[in-house]
Image (cartoon, rainbow, N blue to C red):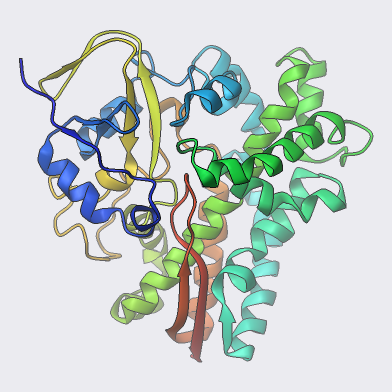
Length: 391
């Protein structure tokens, strides 16, 4: 029986959150399965194994939580992210209706108008923070309005979402500091974000109407609402910021995109592959299972390292290079299978429209200052100041 390599490496130190890629490379070299002794879980660092696990919910279950800390996993059992079919199928069916690809056509004119306005203003300004001034704009002006929460709550959505993501890791200082904001959101969702106070045409109200029809349990609505806030804000904001940072560092790729706008979908995929905003989730094995010749016992918690799989040299040639002609539509940043990101069509629309408008108006991006985001569940930049050279 093969011996499973073990390491006490900590993927949640500040340095690991800033640059996990050397650690990922070492884990991939160690084998298809590596035991992370610090948190008593097994990691899958290679592309093929992460993809296979993502598409096998019967063996790799989400129903016992998908995070690191056992306490948080127990608290979140039963939400969309932490459930398996058939419960997951019912929740996702309701959750995903406003986010279907065909519904994006209805949103496109509104998103295009907002993108036109903000890009024109920022290019005229010449210097701006990509995070606060550009990347947050569409999620916070369009998406927050679509969710339909009361006005005072919209101002807190970003803070709530970042706090929830901070609970994805171990029970460390970041997670402890986030808990008051998480509790504030959960209280708000249960007591204030209810019919009568929310926009009757918004996505949140849509959940309660589905409950009235008997499609989901009414008590699920506050927690399912979480799925409209956390996936649709920080992840998209990070993806937009990462994409601009990559183009600033690779002006030849920006020239390619400006000459050929059909490359925009591939540029989005390549950015998500190279800089995945959500580097990992975990699963629990429902049965003894062999991974790459390595047997694991039922009940083992397994971390799917999307950020590592997306840079696996076994799957992507020269994986550290940003190449928008690569066409990596099979990347893992949105997940795969039953739990593929429910908001991916909205994210693609927002990023694509912004790239289109920026390509019209910007010849070059120059990075002046940047600051990494330190978060237990997310990876990217918290601040990115650029100067733009107009087209």
